[in-house]
Length: 277
Ligand SMILES: NC(=O)c1ccc[n+]([C@@H]2O[C@H](COP(=O)([O-])OP(=O)(O)OC[C@H]3O[C@@H](n4cnc5c(N)ncnc54)[C@H](OP(=O)(O)O)[C@@H]3O)[C@@H](O)[C@H]2O)c1
Image (cartoon, rainbow, N blue to C red; front, side):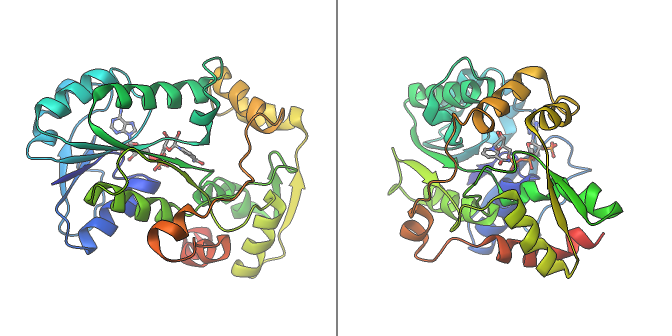
């Protein structure tokens, strides 16, 4: 049995679908079963990542866990997992873990999560995806009211990855031991500017979309409206100061899955209905 945390999220949602379609027994951790929409055949179990004591039922009979990073008491959760018979952790980390910068709030929680998993002495695989293609959904409110899209960090190229590709690699890591001990740098096939993504969306949605680049000050103001200051500082450090390289592309998805990583155009076609709402 595989336990997937974040099962209602971008990556976990793709992962429970992929595992259940391949006939793998999968259990989805959710906080509120009444609100969770899961594929047929996937069992939901309730638990809160910040409260490891809520995981007793979730861990029963589980041999591998797909784990989100950055929650409280992770060492305690890993200890409980080990005692329950779990053998393998596949951790959703990010490129920011590679910086090992404990003064940067995002790099810090990724780094400390990887460290806790290493120290658990369970078998592990770390997934370090670049920005998710699904981040484009943050433009939905703007697309609902017009054709001009204000984009943050307009000069920063990112090798964004389709959550489905992260899930495909996670499924491989969870279902065999070939990827134990591997740190996997995961990217899509192209390093695109935000304006390039908007141009792809324009073509897929058949709209005359225009990207309007925000200054760093405007970006900071937008970020400040949606997240705590330490995360604002972290993202400004990554993308305004350039401490994080998300443009370099890696062949990992192709090497492991045997097929090319999905393009932003493919992602946009798959999710076109989300943009039509
Ligand atoms: N976006 C990016 O570009 C990017 C890049 C690299 C890494 N990451 C990392 O990816 C992670 C987010 O993954 P995602 O996009 O797949 O998730 P997501 O779509 O943001 O959804 C969050 C998921 O986490 C669950 N969750 C939240 N708090 C929880 C808690 N206390 N206990 C149990 N479950 C909880 C939510 O479940 P409920 O249904 O209960 O709300 C939901 O399934 C973050 O750690 C982020 O740092 C993101």
